[in-house]
Image (cartoon, rainbow, N blue to C red):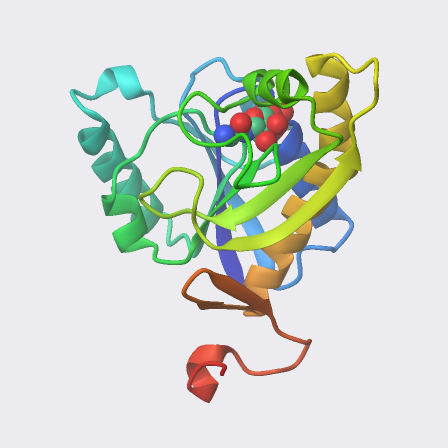
Length: 221
Ligand code: GAR
């Protein structure tokens, strides 16, 4: 059983989707054993408490640098024997030490179809403001492995929805959360926990159930 830590900063609706999926038995071979928040008063911590999952706070302002905070985060994750780190609305910059310690084991949900509307300044509602300003006809969400380069690690799952003529950023955000994010993130976490994600460069192949992980078969060609 893989141990999962969910990193949050705010409302935590994606955390809730994971907790709900877990209670329905949809996170196969995985268990959310920790929630770590970058803000002490995040509502996500309340959601963790309600689900009986231990919550921890790791605030950037308590550390002299992003690197110092990242090192403290890695220590905490190792102390808790975490196998998979899920960024679910985690709005704090982390440095390379996290990805060195958890190579291809940190995943993030982004509320757009990467490589559109991502990178610096593209977070939360801003992403949907950018999409509407650009006049796109579809947008959506992406779950990807996190690497040092912002929002550009190997893509695990994506899903699109239509952008409608009268959409506001809030309306589009809600549609993307409901129809994309809250479905994709639990699916990706469950696939990871079943060793069904084989990473080869920028490509992620989803292995059929029951197939040994690529590492055991010498990778896929
Ligand atoms: C979600 O829409 C998530 O995709 C986004 O922040 C929101 C957090 O909501 N993440 C990013 O923009 C990361 N670049 P939540 O706290 O209710 O899950």
